[in-house]
Length: 140
Image 1 (cartoon, one colour):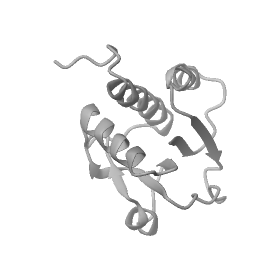
Image 2: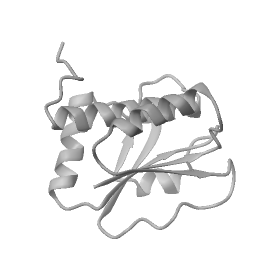
Image 3: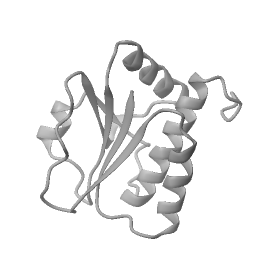
Image 4: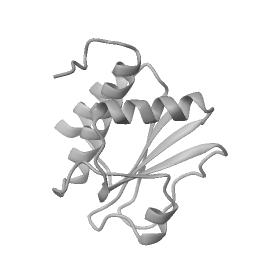
């Protein structure tokens, strides 16, 4: 299953970009990042049998293990792509939120979108590591 991050805004050359790449390179699953302008422009069409996850502060705060189980369930059900949408400063509109298969939150705080992208990349690496029984994630 492809893990596809679709993010508003250009990350450019930055410490956040380095961090995102560091985690994405370590993921054994196929990954892709699509950057969109801050306003306008649309993501490429989601393939049939894909899921959309919208990062939203009003969403569900999943533990790393819960995210891993969700990815595992989607993968095992034959989902071709899990698309993670990171919005611009104003977040997502109601149409995007209501169309999502999951609203995912990193807690009630508001995070800069570049940092949210790095946090998502790390959580995807952690989730796939959990599924591979890799020691990166240690239960506390």
